[in-house]
Amino acid sequence: MPAVMMLLMFSMAIPSASFAQDPTGAKTGTISDIDTTAAKVIDSVSKATDSTVAGVSANVSKLATAVSTIGNADGHNKIAINIMWTLIAGFLVMFMQAGFALVETGFTQKKNVAHTMGMNFLVYALGMIGFWICGFAFMFGGALNAATLGGAPGVIPDMVTIHLFGHDWNILGKAGFFLNSKVYDVGVYTLFLFQMVFMDTTATIPTGSMAERWSFKSFLVFGLFISMFVYPIFGNWVWGGGWLSQLGVNFGLGHGHVDFAGSSVVHMVGGVAALAGAIVIGPRIGKYGKDGTVNTIPGHNIPMALLGTFILAFGWFGFNPGSTLAGGDYRISIVAVNTMLAGTAGALAALIYMYAKGSKPDPGMMANGMLAGLVAITAPCAFVNSMSSVIIGAIAGILVIVAYNFVDRKLKIDDPVGAFAVHGVNGAWGVLSLGLFADGSYGDGWNGVKGTVKGLFYGDASQFYAQVIGTLTCLVFVFVVMYVFFKVSDKFVKIRVKEADEIAGLDIPEMGVHGYVD
Image (cartoon, rainbow, N blue to C red; front, side, top):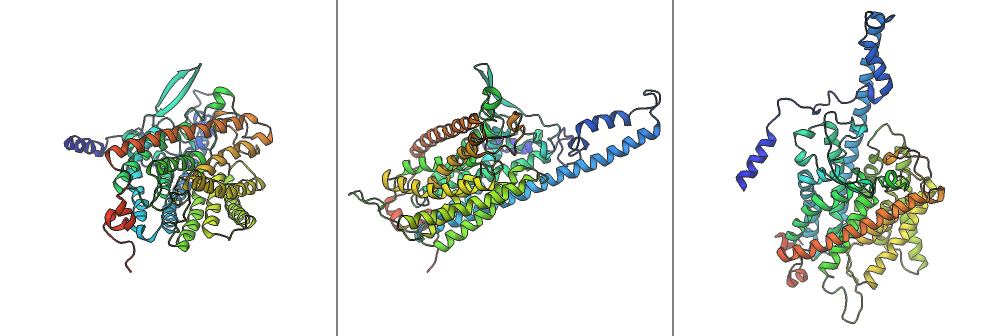
């Protein structure tokens, strides 16, 4: 088997004599990216001669050729700007990994610092390799030709489709495994990087809900599983041309399930996976008393957690505005401001709610309020106005506290950082809020449906129905798959560490080093 794998890797590394794709970018970006009709006219005129088209002089033909050259240069520059913008946005999202690491480590105990940091560090490498092997192919194999990134000339998408109820249901992509030579294209690679760092956010979220008692070896298995299968499959249904995105075309439900930057695809998937994992692994020792008491296990470094929150808020400017995949889309400014407003509204709403309940202004809850607002606005950020953004963020800031307390005190599910409340609950609220507040100012042609995206409050109840269907699908699919995964994987690689190791701290037993040396 090792020999076969080595041969496979070697064969993939051998350069092809020629490429139908565009790995250099020389063929990416033409006059067609400026005006397809003009491109056809100029092409026909530039090829014409006096003998073929009466009245067309050689000078006119030369002029058409010159215009074509200028148009191709403009088209090339347009796509270059889009690719550069998307890559820079992806770099910002990658930096969010540092934010997650600081937030989760700050909210957990000192004795587990190396372990918590270690998971947040290695999930980047695990996710990258898993997504490269098959995750990207499953997610975008049927939608590799992003127009804003040059359309990937020569790349042939492929999708697993079934026919039911008189319609085609796109289920899974099947092109682009290992980023092989058939997708060796600058546009495809740009899309891969941007989507890979999104996937990494999803994979990171359960490391918070299962912190302080999760076996590192079990975590390794999880990192590959979620990046290769769970995130890509649901992502395909929403962003890869899958069946949820086609609810509008097939059944007249608005523009299908719409999620601009990932409230459901990224955050809800991660949050629901975090809930399943927390249930299977059980609470930390000492969290719940036999008499039903709920004991607080305080984090060891609140400044670290708040610093991480600021880093995440900064990285969100790549997450949301970057999802235009186009540096020339002026909607970027609207998206960026809406993102800021919802995050700050979430933090303030959490503060006001705590004061109203007679509590102190817990910095941890304020941080989670900001994160909840950011999670919620991630889906509707391009489709709503500033007032709606503040409302969506404020509701999220309250919802995160209510959800956290319900899960922690009523359901007795131990989630050290509130991962499900932040990402799961408010991921759901985010996509539902789009179905309510989308104001019809953006999204013409989204998911193949004519007209802009409008929510229930602006006259399109069917868009809200599509959002509900997508939300319920995410909840059921992810929870069932991840719950079964954790149960089954525990039979082979124990999910939970030994009791003695948990009490002593996981840094030495699991990682072999202390996080802090006193």
